[in-house]
Image 1 (cartoon, chains in turn blue, red):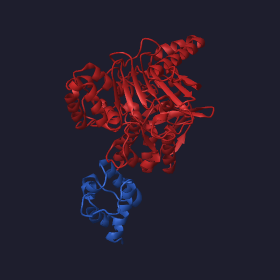
Image 2 (tube, one colour):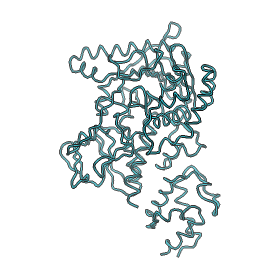
Image 3 (tube, helix red, strand yellow):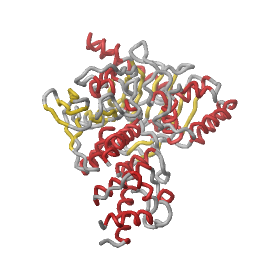
Image 4 (cartoon, helix red, strand yellow):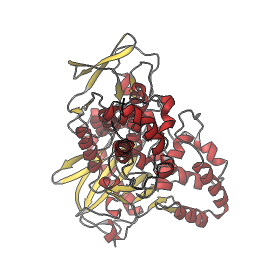
Length: 83
Length: 454
């Protein structure tokens, strides 16, 4: 059973690899990722693909908006990580 | 290069991918070769879309992120400045658009308001929207600028650095080129095009992709209305789900195993190039410019010449004149627009005449260099080595019909063909230059293969 903190850390690993020129250490959980990092729609697609590749987690297209901020990512993904 | 970028994206997400390369080195239209101890870039004069590492959301940054290659590894160095040189006017530009604005203000004061409005229009235009309708760029630009000379001068670098069409281009393409050349600007990776190719190859290998050299695709096989396999070197068959072809549109269609009602046209534009290695560097002879877009007529004729090559216009490139100079010697490159058919005819008829014509290209390059201020009585240099390539050389190494460098007049903007599973990337998908070709490979892999399998 992963804690929310562990889920956050796994998501952060993915984001750090994708936004490779950005510093992700000071990310604010409640603020949209797009506002803090140089991410566009192609990059969000990469987050979805990395989740599938690394953790076998599927995110259907209608749920993409749930990945908007770190907080919503953890809320949405924690049950999937622990399923 | 677009194929490598596409291959990396696919391999990154666990697709089984093989890149088939006809030659013994990769790169396609942007590659390199060696003569003696010297190594030469082909294609690359400069990388467009130069960005400062702190800037965000620019094509080059997007590309690096998608390939997971850190910016620093490209070791990019900006140009000093470039010049558009016409008979009675010169416009200089750098990687800072404000510099060009000042130049326009100084040389065409009556046009500055129009130029600023054009700039605003360009900045607000979404050039990568695949639904944009085709509008000729000169018609649009003439709404903002009246002076014919200024229009010709603005179009000159944009046409010769990427238009498959003669004398004009689609406005979306114009905006791509304008942003990448005038707003973002030129840079060169330390080590030239090899640095980029090596980075891509390394990344492809890390991702587990397979690359086969000396593997020419001789047939694209389809079954039940979809691609099913490729044939290599006329014998081996590899079965596959999807094909991303970076061969060019007419070249791809020529290896289809079925008739097509549509036959893409071969482009008209090819080039000659003289490469001179000299004892002195350009800056020792008073030349600091990185690239000179030379034109000796009032109008700029970007079209297939009726002679072997156009003597009155050229791109003169000085690879020494980026902010980092790794060369021990001077390197001068003079590129002229050329007529493939005439060169091809001549080459087949007489190798002596072909050699003589190459010599003529070389002699004219000396004259053009003189007109650019090099090799005059007080600025003499010794030539240590020279090499001249022609449209037939380009055809031999790239297998592009007609020795074209910017591909077909017909583009597949969304990358699709009439055969499901067969997609086009690279020059004939419509994104140009090195940065454009990599973006093309990435976006076609994303659009047609990765996002469909989610």
